[in-house]
Image 1 (tube, helix red, strand yellow):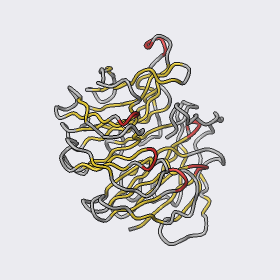
Image 2 (spheres, rainbow, N blue to C red):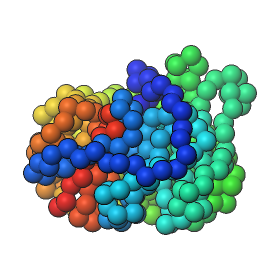
Image 3 (cartoon, rainbow, N blue to C red):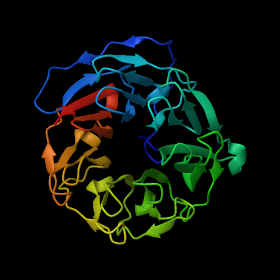
Image 4 (tube, helix red, strand yellow):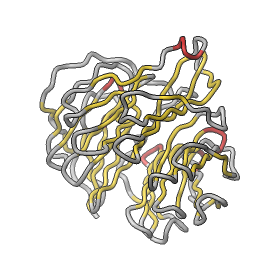
Length: 328
């Protein structure tokens, strides 16, 4: 994910009709195995997998691609946007959402056709521009999107919107923070968290009807949050920031990461094993519920923007169309 404050969106490119993408395999190494998808110089910002076989990656210039065979082949899917795609989320094999610039797109056929569900125009924000970063659903009908509102690339407010009809309509909700909101995660239909700029952490225990601030103990930009259950969660961000909570965020404790690199994504695959990726090809692994982190060999210096694990298979995506695959 490349945000407005210092992380410019990539240049636009011309979209092409649906076609089978040739995956350029780089010689295998132990651990994470790299491949390359899409056009050179274009970053992949997000990845979402339903299982070990079917998944999507997306990034600069509206690029979106799907695999049905665990990444051996990829098929490009067309979205009517030239903005960078910041996030993808599928609530079922057919029904999915993606965020690109100021627009929410929806599909009901696994991404073969995408339609515009909601575009947030500058006229709604006194001429300022909305940028949408993260989307999550807790049921077939109810979902949330977070992002920022900027004027001349300077963030002036946050944006938090929700739907209660499966994405057909979206309503803005005032968040208790005007800072940029970057990522959200729900563990069930009631409990959710949002992280963002200035160390912002917001929490709901009533299905998003209200959101309250939590004390993070940092002013670092937080890019990603992941909860295993109602109590145990982790957040990561700039300057090597790793935070851990075991009490639903009533207290957040810093964890030593031994890096000063910006960390962009965190995911736990079970109660003990977790992964973090970040800028400069950083990959870290924990086997003790995030108390300590061990650096892993990634084989790249490209920025890694997103991470997604499904059972034994892990994926990380990043700069210059890089896709890393890991089998546990």
